[in-house]
Length: 52
Image 1 (tube, rainbow, N blue to C red):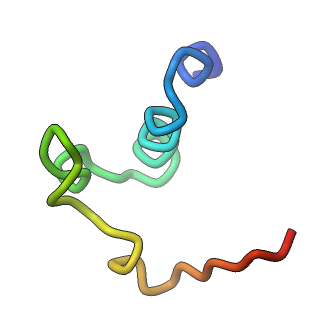
Image 2 (spheres, rainbow, N blue to C red; image 1 turned 30 degrees about the vertical axis):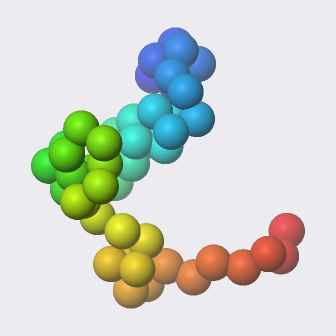
């Protein structure tokens, strides 16, 4: 898994991690450009903050 993640772009690493560790299905990512798939707003439990 580490080899795969090292080879990917930033976007690719996020997609790989979501699919590998959360069970996200490829079709929820949307079309080739990623324009019609899952959005952050669709994840009601997600809380974003600037705190480190």
